[in-house]
Image (cartoon, rainbow, N blue to C red; front, side, top):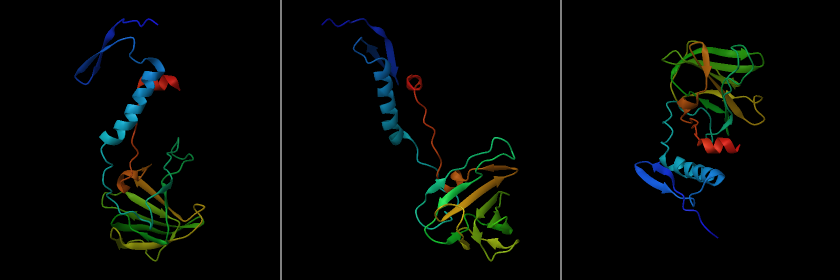
Length: 189
């Protein structure tokens, strides 16, 4: 079996130039190698998530049951917050601020805290003795969870900055990481 020794243009990896021979992997094999390297190096070279600036408001493991899903239009359907797993009924204030709403909305109890930057954090379904105007400190017990929002015990945490809802992942220290794949991988799909 004859092996071609035709040389291809040099491949640059960092500052290292490699000559590619016909034995160099191509096509799907090279794409799979890129994917494997990205997966291996991603875990090693990726910086850690930023530290949380809020207290985790529920008891138990820090687990998101349902993620934020922005609506297509301002009044459209979406999921304007995170559903956090809870193993006990106590809810603590994720940040310090003033209670700007405490009461029922339709069929569930809602507590809204306005933080020092004007951000509004809504927690539901909860039952709280706090009233509008009360001050709370980060980590302070502020409410008891009520059932009904998830099949299991959970707390919905919504964040509104200005007139827009956004995910509170950053404040809770659980950012999602984007993974960029080489063009070859995208072509395989």
